[in-house]
Length: 157
Image 1 (cartoon, rainbow, N blue to C red):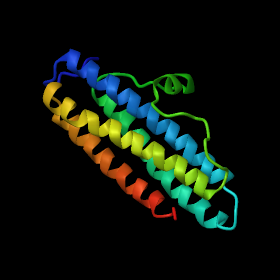
Image 2: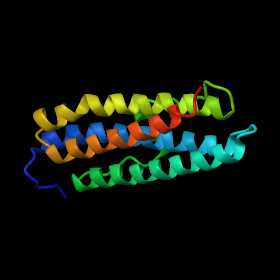
Image 3: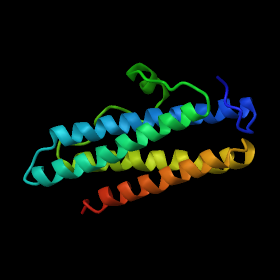
């Protein structure tokens, strides 16, 4: 059923297109953070194991809220790995070493990439597509990712 919420359907479709890419990015980032949690090695294993767990828990909540935002706009969400890989701006490939610094550098780049994509769409969604709610929603996502990026950055020398 189409959402009758005062936004043109063509605008809703464009907003959902942006949000599905955000959802894909978030899911890939969640998966990569889980990988870091499972596979981190080194003398700081336990602390980083717990740290990555906190990060993937936060991202898991974000994944759910993005999917629910898409549904609240009257659309279905992509929900397969194949869909997410086709939509994401991120890569699954691990470019760094399999240690805490390697994972942190990799995840930090992904958070920053997501922040940039979100920031590029805040005004577009609010002004051009006339959806202050989704614009506010992704502004909140920017704040969440900025905090997680800061936490990652703080671990680097």
